Length: 258
Image (cartoon, rainbow, N blue to C red; front, top):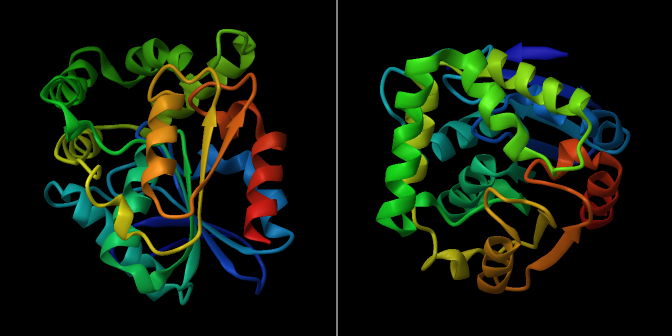
């Protein structure tokens, strides 16, 4: 089932009356990025996956939300759908939004899962500048060429070409301006390094062992900073570990949620 919230955010919803799970995709994704998780989660949970504001089937925000704005939009979604508190699962940029959601709206978050995520690109000027440049690259070459260039970096070198093509096609359908530029700007402004110790909910940090985008070391740093967080590394998986190794990811996720 799909629904659109009052703010124009598209939400895909599966499952029944179990504890709600909110899925937040990465900077090149959409709700469809979690296709490999829907069936496994919906057997036990009510699953909600958004297209972030400015992505895929969601309306464009009137201006740049910033990281706090994306977290506020996720909070509004949970309240509107009667889905709080929720288990919140974020991949990459979605994990950064999930982190801010847990920090700014702690009463709405039951548990936190951060997959191949980061403390934010604002930790160094070099990383922030690289993130800001992405919008110009997208504007210059368009979504299809941009996605074709980025997709191989999101998976391990051993990923089949069919999967690389699928990720590229899905990305090209999901991203556009100004939404992608707003997302990149939110990453460039964010440094959660000094505030992760304030997170008070159970947390699972997951990383693909062959992630060359954020890297295992970044997930290790997050897990070390979040009180009581558990770190799991998925073998033979790149940055999109939930896409490349869905069985292993789902097993870890379901074990944690139960």
